[in-house]
Amino acid sequence: MHTRGLLPSLTLCLAVVTASIGTAAAQPPAPSPARAPIIGRWDLTVQGPKSTYPSWLEVSLSGTRTLVGRFVGGGGSARPISRVDFKDGAVHFAIPPQWEKETSDLVFDGKVTGDTLEGTITTPAGQKHPFTGRRAPSLRRSTPPTWGERVPLLNGKDLTGWTTFGGTSQWSVENGILKNAKSGANLVTTAKFTDFKLHVEVNLPKGSNSGIYLRGRYEVQVEDSTDPEPKSTDLGGVYGFLVPNENAGTGAGTWQTFDITLVGRRVTVVLNGKTIICDQTIPGITGGALDSDEGAPGPIYLQGDHGAVQYRNLHITPAK
Image (cartoon, rainbow, N blue to C red):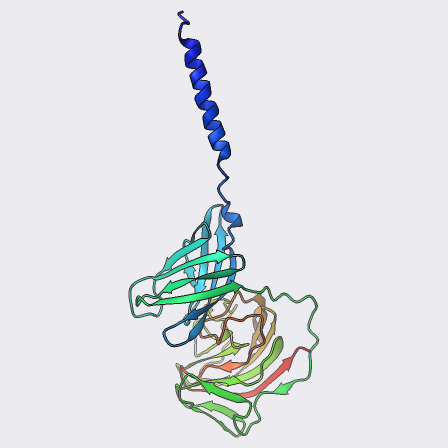
């Protein structure tokens, strides 16, 4: 075997390999998706054409390399995000329309800086809405609540302690019953609460719809629903998030009783004596929320823009 020329060739190959190793070692490792700073829940405030509105985003890791999520806009329910793109602090995703009349996607582009998130939402109508956001608080409580005195929310005579927003008020009080005659304004308490136990009795005509917003941010659905396999958007569900374990409704035209306990994010809903949601975590605000400041106290608000409804015996027991 001839070896002339073999040593120089071998030396050249070793030099190339060594250079390659050195180049590879100089490259920083690609960031792991599991440590992407976009992961988590974000409370957003969006600047619309006329005013600001609240929004919410959650990003999580699916498997080992794919980021997915959920998004809540100014209305509607939590919407799934099949893929969230994140690189060098920039986040991007697109989701199909939900209740919008347009057919284009909603497009989200933002930039993470520490615990803040800023960017632009392009609506299906093509409008660009700038937003700012911050990480959502955990709302974990270190000790169980100590309950105060039970307080009536309605005096049985008039709307003292309440105010309306979002349309022409159709609310009145007659013989201790709070009535919304038809679709109009929403009704909200002037008092604000943190953790509480709420008792409400409600009567819906056939086909109507309302909602009880806890701290003005989390809607417990009030609807004439008959589905034996309920959804989060049916009676007693936390809209778009938490599904009742059964349909415990007694039907349109009957008085139905809610007992709702909210401590931090943890909610229990008892409907007509049956526990249909037991100590579950509400991930974030629901569509129609007053704001996205989840760490702050908030009011009780009753949805009046969907249809006729009656309420009575509204009482709240706040935590001390």
